[in-house]
Amino acid sequence: MNNIVSFTLKEYKTKQNVNLSDFAGGPVIIQFWVAWCPDCMRELPLLEQFHKSMNSDEITVLTVNVTGREGSLEKRDQFIHKNNLTVPILLDEGTEVYDQFECTSVPTTILLDKNHEEQARYSDQDSFQNILYGVSRLLS
Image 1 (cartoon, rainbow, N blue to C red):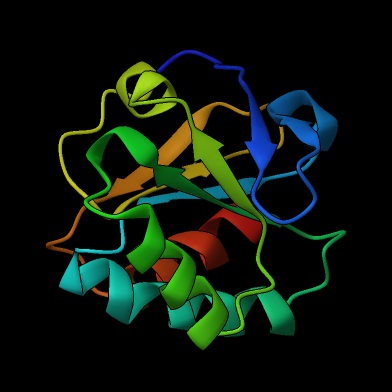
Image 2 (cartoon, rainbow, N blue to C red):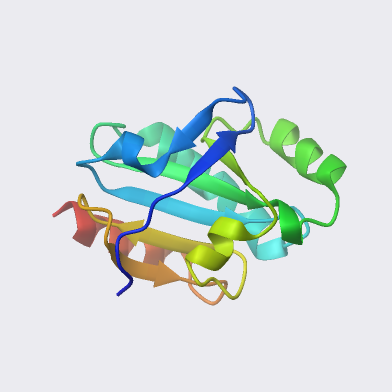
């Protein structure tokens, strides 16, 4: 598993900087995505439902829009508004954080434990049920 990572990215709606260390002491789900990706478009609404159903004290859900791989910022904005996403959407500068996490595809979902050490990683080949199973193991 990877070493502890850190990053600061701007949040899409609030324009505020969000640092991974803001969530110290708790597990974090990070999902990297782009609007042109059918798997991302299927998973993000599921992650949104999960985000709304979870107690934010138990686990933090963050999504990262990989702007350097995004086809159209306009399509991204339309997708966010159409799906009424409330999950935090962080904007990767190019592919900086995506590369830092050594991602090779979208969506990539990474589960970090309370020390922010990577415990599991899921690619476009994994089902959302697999991710939920990993989350349940992380929280147990």
